[in-house]
Length: 235
Image 1 (cartoon, rainbow, N blue to C red):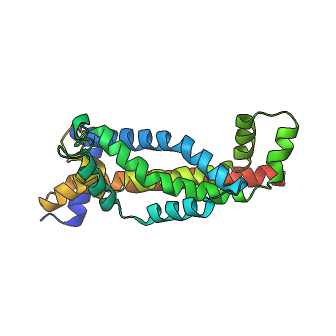
Image 2: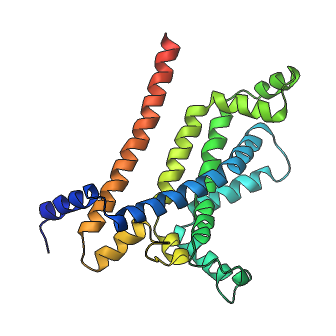
Image 3: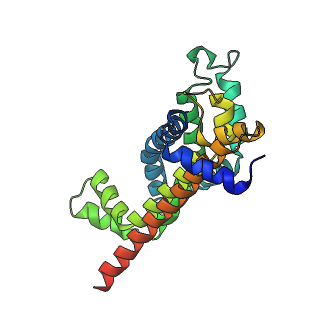
């Protein structure tokens, strides 16, 4: 086994070399995760908003169900999707198993409850009279939602960062429904798992560095945005 320092040096060299296989894995991960996040966001915004501003029969049940989904391990979500999408499953005819669309579906199921929970909390910080005031002034429902969302934009940004970080770094569901197919469904985390079991650490370290840098950049983005907001208010 190579020393840790030598393996890390080789990993950095691999990243800098523009290795097609390595960057292909990174692009697949980002493509799948960003697509899942963008598809989940509109419904999560709407549900988080509704749960915050209205009480209706079944309200507590929806909140409880969402919290339950939030606690389900990603590997269980992968198992459910495999059962549904396998050849003998109810949706087997769609031939989605071991494809990127299947991975996107899995990641939507993973990030949606987290988005709803964080957006629900964000909207609860806004006065309920804001909706009535905006509607009284003639704003449409969609415009009112947009105006209120702008008031909690940093909380929304934090929710997006947390959700993206959760899905881009998960391995269980991606491995089960994607199949870890080279050049198609192999992601950063599934590749790390594969390379580690083979005793090949260089590519795993390189991909791990990408995840660490991504986490740092995303949290810096949230921190800088909050800092500018506070500075703007103080001025």
